[in-house]
Length: 246
Image (cartoon, rainbow, N blue to C red; front, top):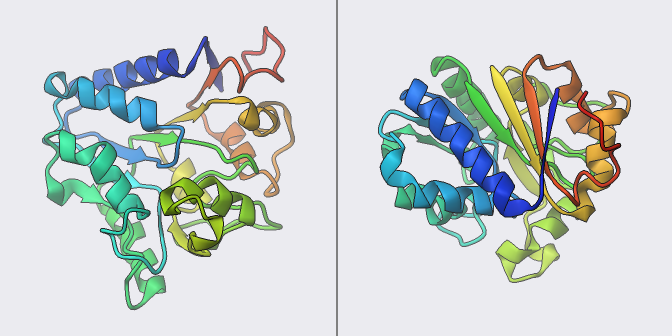
């Protein structure tokens, strides 16, 4: 696990966008796993601003998750979020955009279909992750056990509260369920970058880096992955010792 520290969110976003650009230049058909939420907004802004220098046409993108029960055009849907923040501004082929269908008639079948689509693409080359204040990644919530593959997740109140801005500030309007990649799917990525910004993420980051591997902090499972980079701003890294590199 490589720990990278940045003075602020903007410096982190710039460095991550540079890394993704270099990866896409080296492999124009890269399979890219993407997150949503507040944390990647600055990163997506950087990608939008650099879109002319990035070869998007062959990129295949898989999002971590989507809410159950709302249409993809709903302002709170992650599909709408991704189009608004990134996809509508770059030259990616719409056929190469993959986001779970939260309105599928058979949600379990949709989970199997999504997992099969990732496998058919050859797996994810580079997975970008955020981390919740409770240590979740994707919507793999703290629990006694974790689902290996794409599944229907019951969302904790903290996770719904963190998405309230997409639903007019009302966390109770956030759906109670989502479709999410599972831990084995995420850990199957050839390379992983986890991004955390802000003091509210510091405890989860500490558990990820220094704590035991436990399903009560799902992000801790990244400790077993051979190629993980953790990118932190100063506030998210505040509980780590200055020389922590892992």
